[in-house]
Length: 247
Image 1: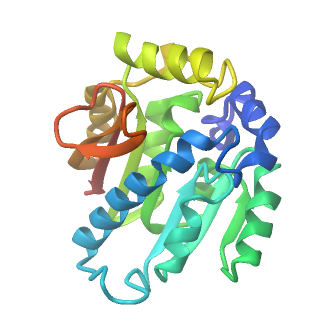
Image 2: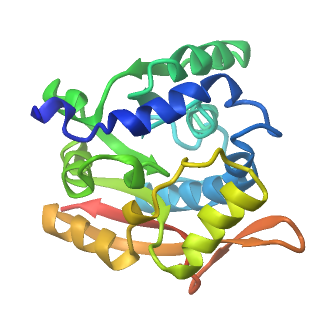
Image 3: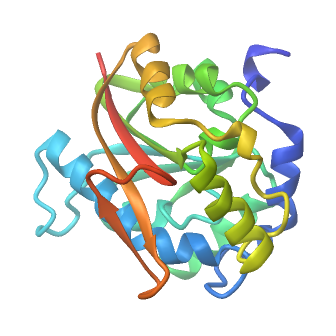
């Protein structure tokens, strides 16, 4: 497999190709991401603001920052980053996601550079960014360590990578597979492969080995009573997010 395609798992890409048109339906197959998006955005914006000394109370707080949203899907994160003033490249290996994202961004009056491409291709082209977002994608790539290393290469020195994924344990199997796919049917069966889930220590190890310094990690916790997500300092048992800086 060539360096330009090493992170791509064709079966995983096909899953999201089939769901592309539903990205912006909050009651559709991407309902879990719509529900989680406020806590994802809270974490991302706070980490970026802290790393680059930005004031989130000011308009266009991220002006001058170049952000890559790898595995951008329909643009649920790319659009808020653009509204904050960042120059955003949204990249996805699932070709059908890109026109969906473009049309929605245009309807919102946002300029976002959406591309059907891979992290490896962007690296080969010499692209560099202040921030790389790799949210809910690491568990879907063919070679997670190689993918994380490529994300590191896409960062400027001192740049920030933020990655979220799913822990691998019995609780995550029950929550993400049995609960989300089999019982509530929030996601189509087969969306996730539990064997591909990654523990927080495994992700941290991948980051360190490729030259990233982990600076923070938190859990995203769902409350089935309130039907809301929150950020936890301690509970990384199912969904979690990690931030690291390029040395």
